[in-house]
Length: 459
Image (cartoon, rainbow, N blue to C red):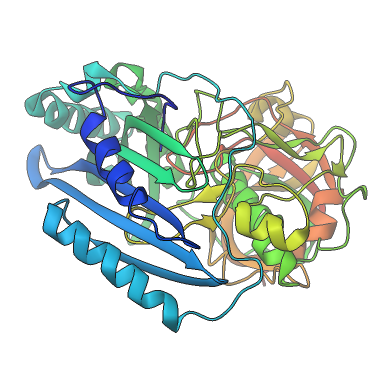
C-alpha cells in the first residue's frame, strides 16, 4: 500500500476510505486495540494467441478487515463490501471472535515509530487512463516481435497485465494512512521446435506506465531462452562453477529472504537465527531490501501495518546485519519493526516478508562474466526450487537446465540434472555479482550471480 499520512479534507482523494477507518476506530471500547484496514482496487489481464484475444478479464474488488486485540487475545473479521451495515457486522464479529483467541503475550498493534516516509511517485494517471484497445495492441505487438525473433519459435501466449489499488488504515495506537498505487507488465511464453523436440522460454518487461516497456528485449529473451535449449542432453555429474541467470537469481534471493524472515527466526525455523553479526558472504556482497527504490516493481512507501517502508541492509559487506520484522515478530524478538509487514489485502492480517530485494550490483554484463570462465554452467532455469530447499538446515537441491561454459563461451545445452549445495556455502562461494539488474514483476530483482563449487548431478 502506498500511503500519505495526512488529514484529507472532504472531497479530496481518499477522504471516503479514511472516513470509514476513522469511524471504526472511534468505536473502540476501553481496553481494546482496534485496527481498521479498507482497500479497493482492480486489475486487467489480456492474453493474446495467434493475433487474437484469447482471454480478457477486468475485475474490481473492495472490502474491509478489522482486527481487535484485548487482554492478549486477537479477533479478526472481514467483508468484501464497504456497505455501512456490513461494516457494523464485521466490527461486531471481530469483537466476538476475541473470546476465541489464544492469549498471546506479544499480541498488539503497530505503533508510530517516527520513521519518515520516502516520497515516491507510485501512481500514474497515464496508466489509469490507458485505453483498453492499446493494452490489447501491446500484447499483440509483443507476440509479433517474438515470432519475428526466430523462425523456430512459437508463442504459447502473449500477455498484458496491470493492477491498481487504494487503501487506508487506522489504529487506536495512532496510525492513520491512505494511499494508492498502480503498475503494469507484459510477458510472453514461447515454444521452440526442432524436429520432435520442443523447449520453452519466457520474457518480461515491467513499468509504472506502458511507455516504460522494452518489448524488443522481452521478445528476444523469450526466443533465446527457448532456442538455446534445443538439443539439450543430460550432463555428467561433477562439481562446477555456476552462473545464475537474473531470473534464477531472483528466485534464489526469495529463498534467502525466507531465512531472514523475523517470524521464522523467532520460531527457530531459520538457519541464521543465531548469526547476527557473522560473516555469511564475501565482503563485496550486499543484500538490500529497498522498497524505496522506484525501479522495484513492488516499491511502496508504507508496509502492511501503516509504518514507513525503509531501506534495510540485510547482508552488508558480507556480514549479516538484520532480519526483517513486522511489529509482532519484532516484539517477540525484543527489537523494533523494520517496516516489513506484508498484507495480501483486507481479508487477512499482516505477516512478515521482504518487500523489494536486490543485490548491490557489480559492473560486468553476463557476456563479460561468461568470457572469464574456462569451465562452468550457465543456469537458465530451475524447477521445484522451493520444495528443494530446507530453510533450517540450508540443504539446497533443485532441478535445472542451461548451457555449459567452455573457454569463455556458452557451449552445448543441458537439462534433466540437479544443482546442489547448501545456502550457507552458496552465499560464501559467491565470486561475482553482475551489473545487469533486471527488474521483474516479483519481490526480488534479478542479476547475474556466479557461485563456485556447486554439485551438478546428471548422468
